[in-house]
Length: 336
Image (cartoon, rainbow, N blue to C red; front, top):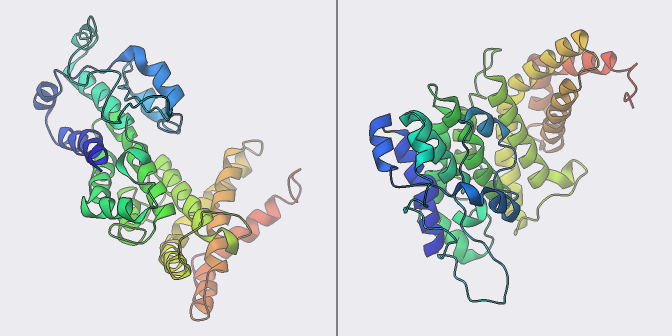
């Protein structure tokens, strides 16, 4: 628990505080922190799940990328403790500090933020824990709220694309938490609602950021598969109790119900892209994810909401968009 609390402070609360500072104050706060750039390659090999799906983060950063590596060794041959590290956090390695002196203050802070937030993975803050004691630790320390605030702060960054691009890292932690323990404080009810609002998935218009829209779509689709796989013909994560599973599905269904207008817009956009660029496969991915959401939506409707489902699909134009897509793809090689 102490290690999880330490990781929460360093990888979540510290970056969140830095995001609220001006460049001068943030630079001074992080002046002594120089991540070990040479450890980057070995760190990626050890934690392959820590930085996947963040190509947009790397593209937005200065050329000099940095990463701090905390050793995670599962070997039983030594007595190494998780609070130990292969590098010292706040003592600059010899010859390393010059890398940041060549950057502007904003670039240096962005690079160091990337290193700090890049260390945030579910296991380090207890997000993937299934044991009762570990789950209680996540609740008691309000780790979920801290990660949510970091995610919202990254989404709200409009002056720095590098900082905004970091939003996928805390979201991955929340996603894994909701998939394993969907019920609880800042769970799939209020927590997921906050995440979708931060991504503006509740705004029904074509002006919403396409990347944010895709992130929200993939998040919902992932949770639909994990929590409702047996209702849509798949295999997801086992939820510990049947009543919890039913409650989680019901809460997720409410989010999908609210997202139907946004799904309709995305399906209509896919139709337009398909008409212009028939060979472009990007629209196929979008259609597949939206179809998954709608399958969950229909498959998990109960006796009281079944009529409402049909009316909503017709009223929003979603059914019409689905029919048009079905007709448009009938001559394509993958039509079956």
